[in-house]
Length: 244
Ligand SMILES: [Zn+2]
Image (cartoon, rainbow, N blue to C red; front, side):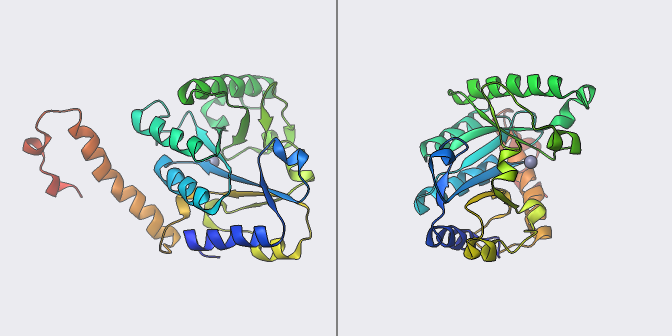
């Protein structure tokens, strides 16, 4: 499968064709054959917005998990808030993407981690103006995967139910580990849990190297324009032609 909107659209079409109705982390309980579509936003909220628009055009709703502790974006910034509101108004849900590595002092302390998740969800809720009641883990440790963490008021997408009662498939590191289209077509599973990363999807296919290189190099330009809003006469200090 290619990492383009067109092939993601074909995947959604295949799901529809085989009777998988899009569900979220609550509504699946009322549905028969269904699929939970999930996106982890590891570094680029703008790519998430593009995916959210595409999904709206395709008539599906999914859940976007965003980090509160990322070095790449700040959910309280104006640009991010606008982006997150667009995702919500496109009919999608926002959940918390949680990076346990941020709290090395809590390594192995599942109760402590549970409390941090509740705390971060509350803060993220304030940023987006509505409550956040789902969490997914960013690069989860074996301990957190096995813990089946129960957090009051929050659905843990790494809870046992989403792996035991669902067939889970993911495009982590821009690679499907299984033939996702074949598995859908086989109708072997009643419930699917599909994680994709909007970051990897483009109009035209880009390989792993090129998608990373483009993101890193575009960062210079973006940083320049953010600087422009914060310093008078940036062009006189460093003309834009000097951006590498
Ligand atoms: Zn992640």
